[in-house]
Amino acid sequence: MTETTDATPLHYRWNFIAFVVDYVFFGIAISFARLDSVLPAFVGQFTQSAPIIGLVSTVWTGTWLLPQVVSARWINDKPRKKPYLIAGLSGRVSFWIIALLLWLGLARNPAFILAAFFACIGLFGITDGFASVAWFDLLARAIPLKRRGRLMGLAQILSGLAGLGVGWVISSILRSGRFSFPDDYALIFTLAGAAFIPSTIALLLLREVAADAPESSSERSECNGWFTPWRQDPVFRQLMVCRVLTGMVALVSPFYVIHATTSLNLSEAVVGSFVAAQQVAGLASGALLGLISDRWGPSHTIRVSSILAMAGPLFALATHVTDGALLVRAYPLVYVALGAYQSSTMLGFYNYLLELAPDDVRPSYIGLGNTITGVLTLAPTVGGWVLETTSYTTLFAITAVLISLGLVVALRLSPALEVEGHP
View 1 (cartoon, rainbow, N blue to C red):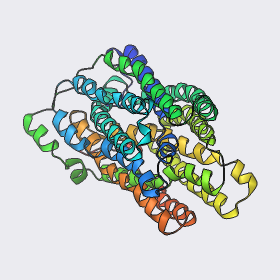
View 2: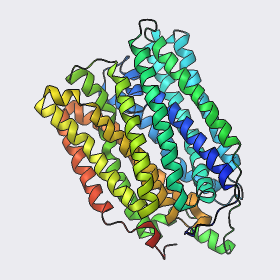
View 3: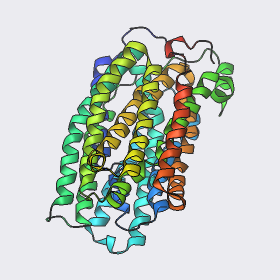
C-alpha cells in the first residue's frame, strides 16, 4: 500500500503542472466527442436503431477497459512506465481520421462511415486504455494522496470552464446554416483532434519518478498473477462490486439525448446545452469533491458519486412519467447529475484504488480493476434492448434500482487510509 505521508516526490511541481495540462486538454477533446451526447447524436444521423446507438458506448468503453489486464501484466514489472504511456498516444489520430472521412463526403455511404467510425473509436479506446495503465501508475508515484485531490479538482475546474466554451461552440456549429451535415460534425471532430495536441505534449514532458523494487522476485511472482488482487484482497472485491453497480448508469446515458429529442421533442441543438451542463457540473463537483477527497478520503467521494449516479435516471423517469413542461425545460439537470458523477469517478474510485494497491503491483490492480469494470461495456447495448422491448419508464427504473444497490455497498467501504493488511 502507498505510504500516506506528506513527503514531496522528486519533480513534484513540474509533474503537477504537466498532469493538469494533460487532464484539461484531454477533457476539452473529450467534450467535443461526448460519449453521452455528441457521439450518439452523430450515429443517430445514420440510424434510429437503439442497439446500434448503444454500441457507441459499448465499443468505446469495451476497447478501453477490457484489454487492460493484459497490458497491466505486460508492464507491471517494467522499471519505466513512461515509454508505454507514450506508445499509447498514437490512437489519438483517430479523431482526425473520422473528420477527414466526413470532409471528403464519405457520409453518403452510411454503412461505410459507421463501420469506419466504430473502427476509429475502437482504435482510440485500445490505445488510450493501454496508455492509462501507465498513466495511473505515474500519477500515483508523482502526486501524493493528500495532494491528488487538489490536482484533480483544479484540473476538473479548468476543464469545466473550458467545457462551457465547448458546449457553446458545439451549439453554434449545429445551429449554424454555414455548416450542414456532415460538415458540422467533421468540424467538431477536427476540434477534438486539435485539443489532444497540448495534452500529448504535456505527457511527453512528464518526468518519471522511479518506482520502488519489490522485496524479492518470489514476492513479485506471487503478487503479479492475473487475478491475484481479486482472489486475495476483499476490499478490492468490494470496491469493484460498488463500481460496477453504480456504473450501471451506462444503461441509460446514451439514450438521454435520444429521449430528449424524440420523446420530449427538444431540438437537436440542445446537445450543446447538455454538454455545457455536464461541464458546469464537472466544474462544481471537481472543486467540492476534490476538497472532500483530500480532507476525508476517497471513500466519502464514492458515496457522493453513487448518489449522483442515481439522481440522473430518477429525474429522467419523473420527466417521462409526468411530461410536465417545467421538468422538460429542466432536462439538462440529467446531464448535471451525469457530469458530476463522471467527475467524481476519478476522485473517488480511482483515487481509492491507487491507495489500495501495493506500490510494486499497482498496474495489476489498475488493469484488473478496469477489466472487471469492462462488464459495463455491455450495459448500453442491453439498455438499448430493454428500451426497444419495454419503455423508457422501465429502463430508467431498472437503472435507478441497480445504482441504489451500489450505494449500499459504498456505505460499507472502509476509508482508504484505514485499509491495512491486504496484499
